[in-house]
Amino acid sequence: MSKEKIVEQLRRIADSLERIAPPKPDNPDITSGEAFVWQAETNDLRLIPKVNHVDMSMLHGIDRVKDILLDNTMRFAKGLPANNALLWGARGMGKSSLVKAAHALVNRELENSLVLVEIHREDIPSLPALMQLLQKTDRRCVLFCDDLSFDSDDSTYKSLKTVLDGGLEGRPANVIFYATSNRRHMMRRDMIENERSTAIMPSEAIEEKVSLSDRFGLWLGFHSCSQDEYLEMIRRYLAHYKIPISEEDFTAEAIEWTRTRGSRSGRVAWQYIQDIAGRTGTQIE
Image (cartoon, rainbow, N blue to C red):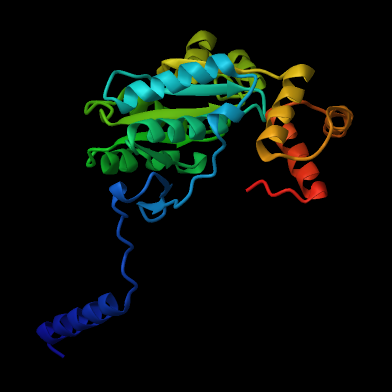
C-alpha cells in the first residue's frame, strides 16, 4: 500500500474516532447562575443551582469577623478595592458558612452581582487555568477554597503564592480569593518546627513556608465559643424554625450534647438542632 493511501486511511480512522467520541462539555454561561464548582479534570465549571447556605443573622459569636468580611465582599462587588481573605481557626465555628452567607447577602442587596466559584484543595495546581477563564467575564467572582492546608512535601503552595500575587499579568480585577483553614499559616506547627530544625538556613526556610498567608490582606480568626454563645446559637435556631421545646429542656439537652461531642461550636449546635427537629417532627429545610 502506498504512503498516500496509508495517510488517507489513518485520516479516515481519526475522523471516525472524532465523530463517535463524546463531545467535550461546554462551560456554562457564567451569567446563568450564582455559584459554580471548578472541575479540574475537564477544565470547566459545573453550575450549582442552589447554594447550601445559612442566613447571616443565624451566625452568632463571630460578629466582628462577620462585619469585616461582609464589608470587604460588598466593596469588591461594587468595584472598589478589596483584599483576599484567610478565615482561620477553630473547627466548626462557621468559616465556610460565613463566606457563603456573605455571598448570598451581597447578592440580595446588589441583585446577583457576585459569582461564587469553589475550587477544591487538590485542584489548586489548576488555579491559573481557572483564573484565565474567569477574567474573560465581566462579572465579579469570589474564588473560594475550603479547608486549605499543605503537607511538608507539598509544593503547590508556591503556585498559589504566584497566583495571589498576580505574577506578570496581575490578578484579574474581577477575582478575589477567600480561603478557610484550621491553621493560620495553613501548615501544622510541627511541620514548621521540623523545617526550622533541619534546614541549612532555618529562618529562610520558615519564611518560605509561612509567607503564603502574607498574600491574604485579611486574616480573620475564629475561636472556640463559650457556653453562653453556644446556647444562644441554639436559641436562635429554635426560634427561627419554631421548634417546640422549653428553655429549661433545651438547655439541659444542649449541654449534655456537647459532653458527648467533646466540644462546643456552631457545627455542634447545628447537629443538636437537627436531632431535636427530627424528634419533634419539625422541618428545617
